[in-house]
Image (cartoon, rainbow over all chains, first blue to last red; front, side, top):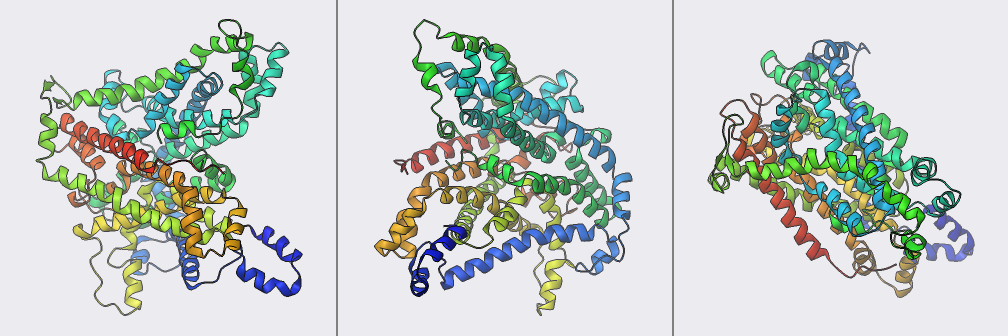
Length: 304
Length: 323
């Protein structure tokens, strides 16, 4: 199916038969009108998906008036004035700090707490662990808006609303289903032989987990961590509800408040685009760095 | 994602030796050692998840049976909130919008994603194309809501482009009635890549000799699709449908900011989804918060998810094709 496969195939077929073979073989490229249209549409879609980002970055370097007069224009200088405005006037500086701290802390805690649980549920099989697994996975189906009001009320009781500690706790709790589910699938895919050997050599059960399984599972745990980083970085509804004061805002909330200020003070498109860049570019960097791993993590067990 | 997938991850021959060699009660030394880890290993995750997720979900069901302004006493009203919701035009509108997103956008996504998968299957540069179209899934949907305001504003990208093509009188894209269709288009755009990737993972697993068989049997492209590709990716379709059902009901951010600064702090009611309805009813700060009605709306969307997921599992259930 791949091109290499095709290449080897073509090479083994005698010169004369090649043309016929290529047209006939179902694994070759078919040239039909429908497929041609599909290809054009697909590449148009790909271009669209790159264009919006390029365009967003370009506009972040222009001022509002020139953006409005010619949305297709290019910046005249690389002066990061919009970023400075967003950073200082739009409270994006503190929001970025909050977002970075919250994202890292909550993702680390999520993985640190979910990994042992997933390990246990993957390795010990009895009726209780099976129902616990179901219990964790059921959470995947509960939309965030169901828990947002009770969480607000409960956290208010213990003075954890408008607090990043509270938000971190909530993120850890809410991320349990997905992380546990992902890591169970991952631990199950690891070989058991090494652990048995370690146990025979006298390592305790905890030692086996800590010194044998964890190092083996580094890749999967990193994937789980980065997936949490992405989802916590982008999370909006819970942060919007639980945080009230500007100095606690995370980036999505700061962005919303920036947009709402503009309703009164007139639109600052340049600053807004700079804000969008601050939200999007870290995700792009992570994706360029770990892309394949993430796609696999997000489709693991789902393609099965 | 429900129980379906718990069973689906490949169970390596894990349980094998350890589980079969149970002779003494309580298992062998390794098993007993492991079982002692139960509380320290599963305890924290269980506790946090129960207190911060399952607890609030159950509490939400209880709140939805009460009339409550957030402070002061609760007044038990039974199904009163639910009855009230269905006589509230705003809620009906929000609920219909959620259904539109779920079904219309859902079907559009699947048709396009499946089409793209067929094109991508044996195309040059498929890795790059796949990676690029997946990326919007990692971006806060809010970004696309803000961008839409710019793309479609009166002097924005689309209108200048149409102007160049000679269209003198473009439609008022961002008028309140046109916003929701635009949201649907944007959602289709940003979600299609994700589902294409999942479907691709399914299609890639089909071993090439099936296609060779097709070629030998003289099957045309359509027959190959009908008798090989579809049956072998059926379960992946099921999973995707469940995933979309769950995520479509949560759609909030993109609606909240769609079109940039269009509203006075909240989006026009024509675009509301149940998630927006819940948020506004509880936290808008413009009227007395009605926590009961707000949670009732959220609980209804949970019910919608549960019913659809159960139905999907029943409909999509087929003899799994082993290959």
